[in-house]
Image (cartoon, rainbow, N blue to C red; front, side, top):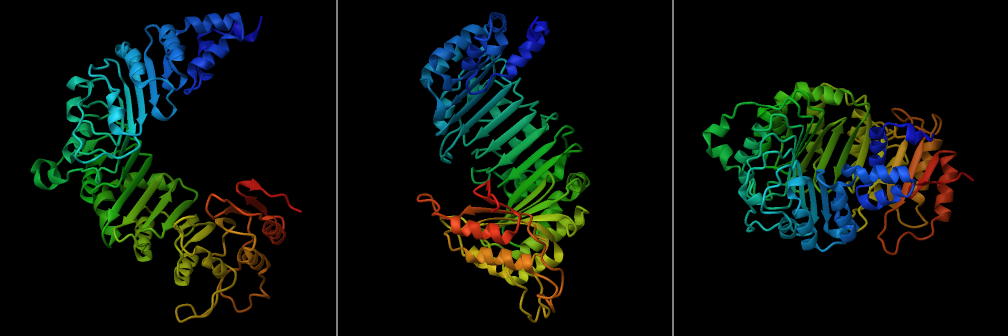
Length: 504
């Protein structure tokens, strides 16, 4: 007897379910039915296997799925970009089964189109609702009332992006996941009320509510909210706060009690120094939770951009600062770095650091600071093909020891611990500065570096190169340059556009 015929039918149904893709569920099931008569009958009788409905499969597949799903809960996906079914016809057909809806995912270019597909009657069993519009909405756009104003009692997972929905009419409570991004006409009081009424919340993601019109008036003008008691979220494991008013971030962080937090990402706009003032106000009482999140990390990453922001990621703890001046400030970064190092109680100086520079060309004194204070083992140099700066001028600074100066009288090699180099600063077949840098660092010796203070550069272990020019036309022939890189690298793994080069 074949193995699949000896398996309990429940196990075989689970295996078959895992073989069905979210994009083409009906096609996959029809293909599986061709394997043998036994599989055909099992799939035909397992109505739950047909419960995933995607508008990308077309009307015939939709009708087949609705016929075979019978009374099973339906998981519906409508993505405008891949849609092959008339929108009104699709939602008319699935709308006839609205009481069976378990999840609904809608993605559209415009918010009005995304909201137009939602029914006026309430799906009684809806647990997941994701509505996303690619384009932001006008602040003048009025809120849409969903489900005829009926409370969404059973909703557990809510994701709204760039859509205007009246949240108060949903009477949200008992959520496990809440994702609000680019939503206008939402107040701090509404958000705090939803969070307070969802004590089993596991994921909280709030982003771009400042630009969409998040009102901070309730915080400063409402005495009850100012004295808001702590909110106990025992099961919250993931918290993401991005592009929100600083006053709201501080308020939220100061009242949340999240003993099981495992991932924390905060991104905020700061007008001026000191950054530690924000960090101390909002994050102080969370430090006992954040310390174990960071302590498990074996390495960390810092992204520094010329466009006025920086990110420090230590394990599952990520802090991003966006400067209102839109100009990067090394002093600001150093202050945040020192605050995290001391308050999170982790010796960042000893951990391997991935330094990622986005078009920011630091002064030699800043590179000396990184050399003295950090252990950079991976260096990424990225330049935007359209708006990039003169980042390639940094390469010669890594090709030789520094010159003596008043601040650093003894010459030293910069970033000597780097063993992995990633860069797109390759524009043509004459990138001699990169070849020269690799060769000089690999050939450095006590004899050639007499009088140099500090360690000699470590040989690279990996070199990742990519074209940094515009598409089209794309990269010109690079054979001569890449051959030179492979030669001077001396057996080191060299990659070009993600593909490993063969040593000659």
